[in-house]
Image 1: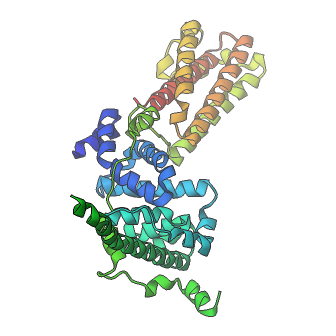
Image 2: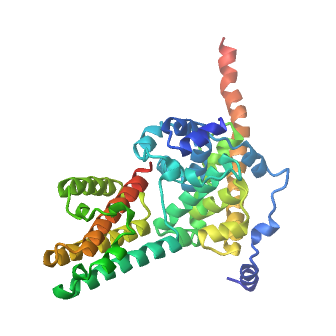
Length: 195
Length: 203
């Protein structure tokens, strides 16, 4: 996307902003989906771009526009958590039972990234948000703690639990995928023989 | 929570410190394989409907604190001066003092030698004020709330100055000084409304 589109959008050109939207929506929507879940992702994505339009005048070009937009998106999503009044509690109260439910294998998908995406969506909210911010988006625990209003220790604990849960889920998915060809081969054998 | 966990919490440590992602970790490989995809439905129409079409760079305005303080002080001074004049007894009004009062009134360039401007074209003036107030009402949501508050306070102060000037002129219609003040207050109101309307419309 030409940088000029950002400049044009900052001067009120909605067509240019639409091009900015199309260039960045996969990244923003992916972030919203991972942090807040698929049900809230569309609405949050729209909120992020409306906020970006309002704040474009403050973009100084000190970082790339993508970086600026990403940071803004994280802020909008975290702000939504706060608005809902669930922020602190949700990061402290993810129960073991919720994590156990999350280990149920996702729908079978051949792609590792898609498997992980599905597994992330099954994580309890607190563990999911912290995992995404730390391991996917690269934030440090201190930054996450500041954003979410929890201690760095809580962030680390939740990350640990999230990783364990996701590893178990991925292992289960991998095992099922490994078993599937054998089963398929068993089924297809007689069919070939019938020809 | 056991002692180790309490200690870790205080030190900002957690189990993840002993649980690094290494290069052989399937989880790390999976994170690397995560892909971003656009949403299944087009979200742009919903976004577009919520966009304020004015310039993004001029959408939100604030005055600096010194500017706000200066504006407030100026208006208080104007209002207080007019109030003082309006409350003075009629016979001792500035109209009877001739030359000394004229010397005070003359520096106002917009009304120099034209005290009648305080009373001319009221309909035009009122229409212009009404138009600008309408623009401001329509665009007030684009202004910083603090700015709106100060604008409204200042407009109220000017309106009060105008009201008091008119009341004083009712008792002393030929008073050059009061006419000058009235014209000046009306000019200030118009100018303030113009500026506010420009800010709110982003032009």
